[in-house]
Every structure is written in C-alpha cells, then in structure tokens.
Amino acid sequence: MAAGSALKPERKLAIGRAQVSVFETKQNLFEAAAEVFFGTVGDAIAEGGRCTIALAGGSTPKALYSMIAKRADQQEDLRRLDWRNVHFFFGDERGVPPDHADSNYGMVLGTLLKHGLVPPRNVHRILAEKGVADAALLYEQEIKKYFDGPPKFHLILLGIGSDGHTASLFPGTAALDVRDHLVTANLVPQMKAERVTLTYPAINAAARVLFMVAGDDKKQAIESLFVRHADLPAAHVQPAGDLLWYLDREAAALLPA
Ligand code: 6PG
Image 1: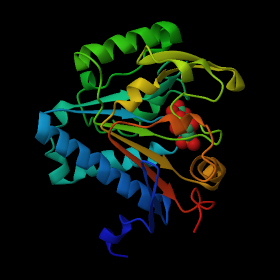
Image 2: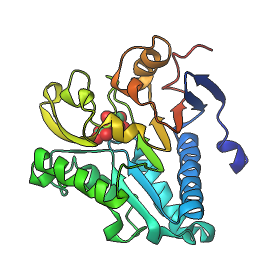
Image 3: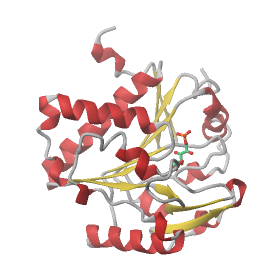
C-alpha cells in the first residue's frame, strides 16, 4: 500500500461539530494522528513562534508517542522543527508519583520524550506526588503563568474510556461541574482512585482537540456518543476550534454504514 494512502481514512462523517474519521487499522489511525501532531507544531511555530500540546494518558497513545519520537529523531524535516518552543502539558494525571507504573508522565517519558524531543523545562507535568489537591492548584498556576492568562492549547489529545470518560472527567464525578477552574482534583469512587484533570473550560478553549479511539471495547461508547447522543463526559468536549475524532474500524463498528 502506498504510504500516502495509509493516512486517508476509509470513512469520514460529520456528527454535530465532530469531524469523525474511520481508519482501517490502528496503525493508520496513528499515522494520521502523527500528521495532525506535526502539522500543528509546524503551523503554530510559523504563526506564533510556539506550540502548546496537552497530551492524553492511558494506553492508546503509547504507540503514537513512540512513532512521533522516532520520526522526529530520524526525519530531517521533522528534526528541523523548532522543538525548543514546543511545550507539553497533560490532560490529566493519576494520583501517583512520576515513577509509578500508572503515571501518565512516566508513560510519556518512556515514549514521546525517549529521545529528548524537547528541553525538560518544556514538559509541564502534574506534580501528583504532592497530593491531588495541591497538584491541581500548582498545575493551574503553571498553566496560567505560561499562557499569561486563559490557556488556548494549540492541540489537546484525548482518549475515551468504555464508560465515556475523557481525561479524568468520569461519569458522576464532581469534576464534570467545575467551571471556575482550569484544573481540578477529582475523586473517582468507581475506580477507587483520585486524579487531577483539565476541566471543560480548559479543554474547550483549545484550538484543536483530537480524540484517538481504537479497539472493540470502545465501540459501545462510540455508539452511545454518536448514535444515541448519550450524555457522556466526552460529549461535553466541544472546543472553540477543530473537534477531530480518529477511530479505527473496530471502535467504529456500531456507527451506521
Ligand atoms: C487516562 C486518560 C484516560 C484515557 C482513557 C482511555 O489517564 O487514563 O486520560 O482518559 O484516555 O481512559 O484509556 P486507554 O487509551 O488506556 O483505553
């Protein structure tokens, strides 16, 4: 298959403001997502001299992050991008220290940052080891300081859980109702966990949001969202800018033909 064709979705549909693309394989999804990532970096740097990206946690993005790190390390045109002015933030973090197996920062460190893509000072991690309440306050202060006002991330990468959560905005949790903060701690009883997460105001101010959803276990959540228009946390991600959903064939299996 010609390399170029791997980037083209096999289906594209507009559902509300969401631009939904369905890819034959997870690999094709990630190749297309990498194009969005690099394209956003190049455009943002060209337009304003810097790029801000909030990274998704969980397992789905691992392969994408590794692909991005490898291509940026090996491809001359990508290596020449002005990575000194690219800043990474996090959509959420688990209530664990950075060296814990569940840490989103730890996952990013071992994938996207494996080859030192950006200077360490450009990685704005959530200091979850300080406790989720303090970590949320510190992270919000860091975001406000960096943006010198309300944040407008050039790109926010997100995933979705089978229950329709995104970032750490879980069904039935207090974070869903936070509108006066950019970041909040969130107790998630159904997971017996505590998290730190960007809130809807921070996410919905983004210039572009890209959801990446792969696997058979997500097909019901996708059907709930896009067929039954269920009131799931991910449904409330309605950014001012682009709302892109990249699905693989398995995750899109219950969408109407
Ligand atoms: C996290 C993420 C979370 C994730 C979904 C999907 O910290 O886990 O922020 O929202 O995107 O749970 O996770 P998977 O990609 O592992 O299925």
